[in-house]
Image (cartoon, rainbow over all chains, first blue to last red; front, side):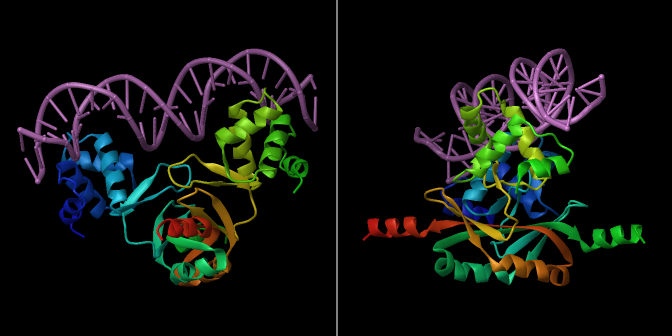
Length: 143
Length: 143
DNA sequence: ATCCCTGCAAACTATTTGCACGGGA
DNA sequence: TCCCGTGCAAATAGTTTGCAGGGAT
């Protein structure tokens, strides 16, 4: 996705904060919260303010460029939107959040109108539990 | 579920705020946020403080008596826990949140260890979209 | 030249916490 | 009696907003 194209298409201006935030999200190794995004943004350009980061994230969410997750009580996190054909697996032990493809979501999308009288737009699946690595480590510790 | 039994089993005391919060949740027609819970609690007993409501909700969540939802940017909402074999359907038009049985969750729980190397504890499915009622109303308005 | 976006600081909302007292076991 | 749970008020964390100036188109 080219940021400029999408921004102009929506009648929005192409500005430095928007470009830098986009770069940060594009190169992120994991979900980031507003504070973390701001930190990374400011290593590139000290002058960019946290409130601009928030406004930019809100704009990107509107344009469906990014997706926000409200996992737990923690701060909201953002990531580049890859549609919703993905579920989030969050390990309670190491805190890592991974993606996993799930046909389940396509199935739900097809079935819900008939089975529930509901017309889905967005489907969000989050799983808490333990990842293999932590699971094995934990078991090893008890043998 | 009997509140007293669960509380005592966990070594916790049975107090008025806990009983009243439990009654409010038990008779709730929908998901409530902390503010709404406090309002309802205070119609029964003016003297019960909001911070006690929060502490009580946290305790209930620990005991798995209630479940919290972090839908959107809104405040956290709470409801009596009915396991996680249920998905949430939230209508963007009327704001209503409904429950729907979903075999999907059982399926996921079985498949994830092998397909994703992940051991699920808790599965949360949230769907945003439009309910039949709003869908029809909207269509009618455009014919 | 227009007016959208921004930085800044202050406001706001939801939630948490320290403390001394009172009630449940 | 013991000490857990409470009310109260203040603190905190995350996010939003009013305003005046600067930059994108």
